[in-house]
Image 1 (cartoon, rainbow, N blue to C red):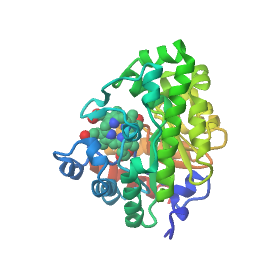
Image 2 (cartoon, rainbow, N blue to C red):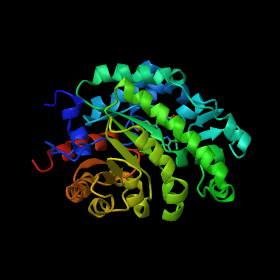
Image 3 (cartoon, protein in one colour):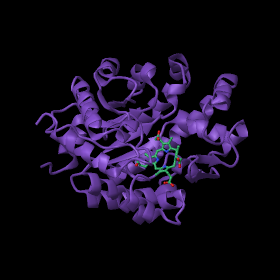
Image 4 (spheres, rainbow, N blue to C red):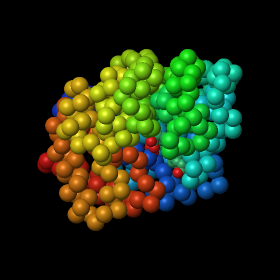
Amino acid sequence: MPVTTKDSAFVRACRGESVPHTPVWFMRQAGRSLPEYRKIREGVGMLESCRRPDLVTEITLQPVRRHGVDAAILFSDIVVPVAAAGVDLDIVAGTGPVVAEPVRTARDVARLRPITPDDVRFVDEAVQLLVRELGATPLIGFAGAPFTLASYLVEGRPSRTYVKTKALMHGDPALWHALCDRLADITLEFLRVQVAAGVSAVQLFDSWAGALSEADYRAHVLPHSAKVLRGLGDTVPKIHFGVGTGHLLTAMGEAGADVVGVDWRTPLDVAAGLVGGRAVQGNLDPTLLFAPPAVVAAEARRVLDEGAKAPGHVFNLGHGVLPETDPDALTRLVELVHAHGR
Ligand code: CP3
């Protein structure tokens, strides 16, 4: 049994060290697929619940207790630090982040002030509570990467085409870079607070980067994500993830992560060849959890066999748990991953 989080299967796999079993956790494991989550969130808004350390602690622990996953992920949201920076926004159920006044001009960018640890005191408090409760189970901190955050700020709400975001990127590159530079500073500060409070790893979510060509990613996005990842130094393992990024995996690895997250479209053995000797995380299709257990098991074994070709493999879904997922399917999947190869 690991005594500290540094000996845990999760941290060891991130670092490409030998593991007793493949570690597993799920993006969006803390959330709407769990009845105990829906109950505790009754009548409490999403942003408000992120700001209450007692609620954050309980919600973060729920999937660890229920599924026996190898890591907890802090209950929060990628827009929490931009709200702390003074942006008027809400997280609307069933829609996602909605920004009152989208950011499109130099004046809008100037209004986006840097954050200090005092602006996110509640995160520091929640992480400290969680680290005490979790013992040798690692806690993953996270933040949104500059591009994905910018897409919400510029569009004002979730988008399919990112038309306003791309128009700004190409129409006024100087303003685009000023916006992303400011977001990188906010993100870095938000992650530093989590690392100082004791998280064992961080994940930088660039969920929507897959909408970009590799050339645009390298010119307009990579330098800002790299500022965040390199700014953290080697304090904790860093995971970098996006959806639909098969064509970006090499570039995303170069941004400076230890582990590159992969969605279900790219087999992990192929991904391993693209990420420059880094560990990989993924990548069972989240919709497969709605298939019969024997199908889930066969697909999970394929993912494990493909992941074994990388220097390190953290089992996960290719994107977040869908709200309608049967929690028992997740518990069974954790058991299967842990038993594999024994
Ligand atoms: O992974 C976890 O369990 C930790 C908690 C977590 C949440 N959001 C809680 C949440 C994490 C890591 C996130 C990150 C996040 N938020 C991302 C990156 C991950 C990804 O999915 O690609 C993005 C793009 C967001 C923005 C966001 N917040 C969206 C698109 C939504 C969904 C809107 C909806 O209701 O369908 C949210 C809301 C949100 N964040 C919920 C949760 C549990 C649902 C709100 C609720 O329960 O009322």
